[in-house]
Length: 472
Image (tube, rainbow, N blue to C red):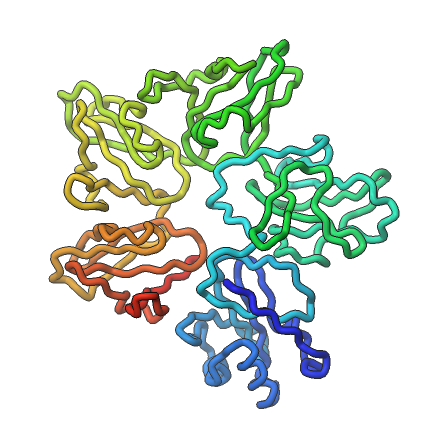
């Protein structure tokens, strides 16, 4: 969303505290309205926030939702006279702003500088000058800034608090400044503010530009640790795998009393990996879980998160059955399934998301006969799996249609779309959608249409419109 900043003079807003009118919190924009305002004040707020003039009439009743300019807002009645409007925004806006700045939003915005989309973070390891500069344990992150003894006030701001410069003060210690924050596992951007001066962490080697000309320090709250026991006489040890595209010189491990270790953040999923010890590749001697990658290479395998059990019923006479999908780059000879009394199966850990896959039975590729949800056409049809689905597309307006597909920004608008399944006259397709805004359309017997049951839509470059869906 593009931020349009308005400098509001003290005279114009003498009757208002802008910070009390609007704020961003937990991925939502919130606007506090007071029914006691004068007509002139209400008109000023309508212009400022581009609100429909009928908003006052709409919120003056016990409604829980209102439509304003084709956008759905939740309504919360704070008191008899105060009403709060809120809506989810696709990404948290985290520009540095002052309390007297008022910001408006354009829903066509896609990327916010300084915001971290945790679902897109696959892995990450810290690179501080000293271990005590950052520590993470039991959901609590401790930041330590050595020096700056002459500073009167030091704050920390980042993607974890919407870059609020006044929200999180640090405490002065004997040799610097320290703060403890409750943070979930994942990636965060941050800066220190010493006596009003913003700066990156001088003790953190990880710096990332936000695309708007600002450099921010990067920190990861780890949830996993690679450990290679022994090899104390080795000069250098790295770890690499499918999570970092086998980059052999990126993740250097540190020596300890047991051998070598590297704590890092690793997104849920299944990964192959190896250690590079003094330029020699080895599998993990302490991990019995390994498999070949289809190229003759034996790799160690780890998995985090929950398992999905892929099952293929029947085919008792088959000699070998493999599983392949976009979760393993469609490697055909890597994921060998185990034979069971009823067929074949393979437990496989995945992150929440939408996946495509096929079975390979004695060299013959085939879709899952027990899964009706597919995508693609002809020989390029794949079975679809929504792991931990949180939304189901449903369309009952075309019970006599021959074929209905749903497509959108969640599957790159592929024309083959997701093939919906008709049950009792209603077309459905379950998916996992990340929090925020999504655009989509249905394709009914080759004709693209917006969702006739969804009032939320926006114009597109073709003048045909797209339906809008917000996921909390």
